[in-house]
Length: 358
Ligand SMILES: Cc1cc2nc3c(=O)[nH]c(=O)nc-3n(C[C@H](O)[C@H](O)[C@H](O)COP(=O)(O)O)c2cc1C
Image (cartoon, rainbow, N blue to C red):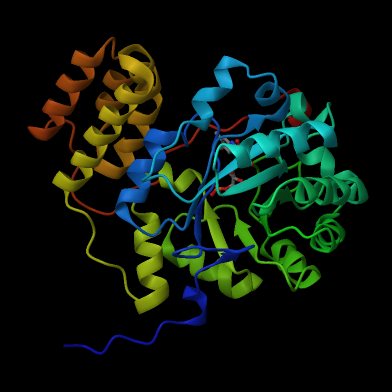
């Protein structure tokens, strides 16, 4: 039997405040995707140390708006869970964090990176990168109000003229933040260009006592290794790539520990995963909501399953549960299959054009 190399320092599970995770890999928040159904299906494959909810407006949470309760749905298998909140007012964040702790969630994450205008014009999201002192005051106030770990997700800064992430990270560290996730782009960049590993490294260097989780453009275990090695970050958060390759956490954790990928999931295993996700969606959202969400999610699985454009066309037009099941039965019979191989990255739709108009 070949000798298994000793675990490397890169495979060190993350410690977030007092919470020891099973790995150093995080399912990044993706509004519209990382709901309970998707999180459960990802966790089942292994490798996910922590998953984060879709962003939830602190104000809506405090007002008990019905719509946001769906975002808080969780289960015993969905642990540990970090709940991400957004808001521009410290008091509303504090109140929402208290509610999150009272509901028994493990971590509260403050969104200090979202570039969307709707959030930034109220002082939330990446607007916090322009006011590091206030951002630190927010974290300090939340920390004083709850005993669960308080984390923050940031970007490199507002734009190239305002790269504030190192200063922000230092201030958040002083305020007692338990971990910082940094997406290596500025707010002005949106999702364009390449993620800047040197920018993430500067955050790691600015906050030596705080676990920094690098994020952006990780599409394979090798990308994750590169992120860890080049930036010195303690963990990696993966978002879009998980949509078409939910095995990426399992594979990355295996690579980090043993230096090799485990055997790729078979076509049957991948299809079973897709069926399971659809079933979970039906349970979570009811048949109508599940079909609507699957029209989008099902397209990303074309990458995981190696399926053709006709499959995507049919999925995006599926009218009801029966139609989705018929498509998946056809896939099982070999229809739409383009051939074996590693999953291809599927095109994930992200907002385009000037960020001010998102
Ligand atoms: C559709 C979509 C929704 C997102 N929703 C959130 C969110 O709710 N909260 C957040 O902090 N970041 C959000 N992000 C940003 C991601 O968490 C992540 O930082 C970004 O996609 C870069 O990582 P990736 O290349 O691994 O996807 C979203 C990104 C996308 C594409």
